[in-house]
Image 1 (cartoon, rainbow, N blue to C red):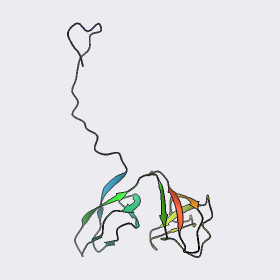
Image 2: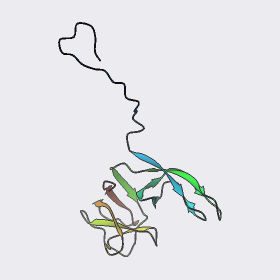
Image 3: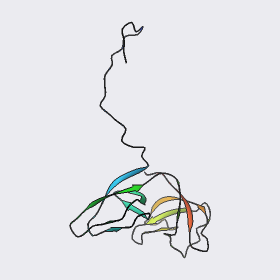
Image 4: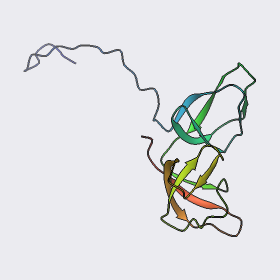
Length: 131
């Protein structure tokens, strides 16, 4: 900001921009005839993350949901249980089955396993960046 007596001439131009969020979550639209369960992984509007509330839409109706997209470590049992899920395995989202899989073909890369599948079919994964 300029002031009287400033040694270098400057022009102060106020810009009407403001930070909206830290980018750790986004509000997305839930399509018609869809049920979203809180604390489950979802892929909506091109964003992959954890839904923060339950939402059910009827035919011809849409709604908004907040999903957590923070690049962090998550625990889940929302996986294809017949696969190994060893540490450092790249994992993908199968949007048809609504599960995390080791199968790359036709699926979106979402992260990497940080704790292998246990006896309860639970893994930890590091969520990758949204691209």
